Amino acid sequence: MKLKSIAALALCAAVAGGIACGALPAIKAEAAGTPIDVWLIGGQSNAVGYAQDSPSDPDPRYTQGFDNVLYYGAYETDTNSCPTDFVPVKLGQGKNWSGGTKGSGAEIGIASALGDSQGKNAIIKCAWGATFLYPDRSASVSQSQGTWTSPSYQQSSGQTGGMIGNLYRRFLQTVQTGLGKLKAQGYLPTVRGMWWMQGEAESGTSAYANAYEACLTDFISDIRGDLSDVAESDLSEMPFVLGKIYRNPAYPAQAHIDTVRRAQQQVADTLAGVFAVDCTGLAQQDGWHFKADAQKYLGEQFVSAVLASEGLRKVTVNAENVSVSGAGIKEAGQTVRLRVTPKRGYRVTGVSYRQAGGEEISLSQTDGVYNFVMPDANVTVTVKTQALPLYRVTEITVNSADMGSVFPSAEAKNGWYEGESVQIAVQPKSGYRIARVTVNGQETACDSERNGLYLYTVSCLADVVFRAEFTKADTPPAAEEPPVPTQPSEEEKADKNYTGLIVGCSVGGAALLGGGAAAAVIVLKKKKK
Image 1 (cartoon, rainbow, N blue to C red):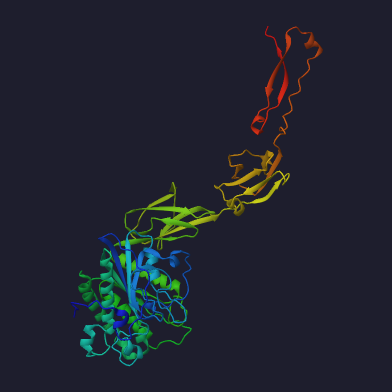
Image 2: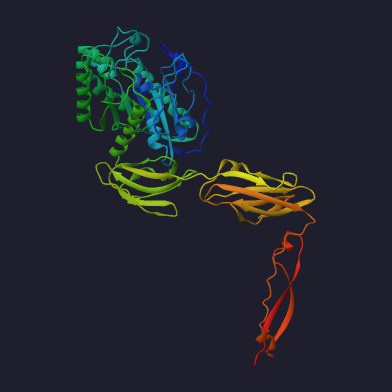
């Protein structure tokens, strides 16, 4: 059964047990005809996203937002926080509790996988906690929100009417609304695949668990057909990736969880384009709900499965203290060019890559770019870094504070690293001038003068003692001692081939500091014979 026309409803208030949503800033419209890939999420609480922590990965985009991965949906929340338009993916866009706690779901993993790729991506989510794929009527959530039961299973089981299948219909409505918003902003959306995280609800009841394989098979077939109508494109083979549910063993086990897991794997093994990701062992914050690192992993596995089904591969970067461009989605045989830029205070000591189960292969660089040919497999790039020592001005002295002052720049106060330089300004007071400036005891020259401030550049790879000495402006600097003439011997005096010449000169540098001192130098020259 296919839905030939889905009315674009405002889901936040129209469906039973509707979702109250507040406004979030909308994304500015892109140029007309901009392609955008769409990734769908559906299911129960682990699809909604209950993770209340942050990923161990320090990527600042988790809090600032992934500009090229947008997010929209209609899903379970207590705090009017469903986005009314597409916004960048970031933490806290899953379940928002009335107590102020925000959750995150697999959208952070999808963004992690696609954040460095070229082009635009969008995620559309429709999910609700504790909901059933089976046509349950007794649970309170089934009565308020409905079930995910697809039309084909409703027909074959005879379980129809009421709230049965309401979440299935809501999902299609949410996708249609989201696609319409993208088109209105000038995008050309293409649905790439669907992530399904559900099954916990059925694992407590034998009849529900035993029916799960048939329910899921019909759901995938129906959703592909109906999404084809909604998206106006052939999605009959749309990649469908599902998470095999996992119960933390520290909590009481659901009696039929293994039945549901076997059904999920059987469907993945039987239907074309269906893939299972095992959730066993992923970190949970309670008996069922995954932490942020687990949600990140699941979102990344979703993208990887879709790409693998299309013959594409992914370059993932494992690095801290650097920024890396050029990773993301690649084709086998493509030349990958990675530009690695260390953050301030670090140097890159090594870059390597490897595919799963393969050896680590070191890369060399040219002008900061590392190249390799993409194998027919996903690749992880590892960047090793080393912290650089920080150098500071540890002491500043003057011979007299009444004669002048020294003003270090903010950079000089905070310190500098190898390859950097800082400036220190020296200002003599009226009636005085700079006699000399030393850095760690070595005299240094002034770089420039600005409005009575004399600027000195420091770039040495050591902590610095900076000293300025002043003198009165009318006091000439101490002249260099003239060389002492060598007195000729009595024999040389008697030698008529010798004569004495007296020449005058000025001491180099004296004029630079405000006055020249003359000196007489006696030079003895021997006559040519």
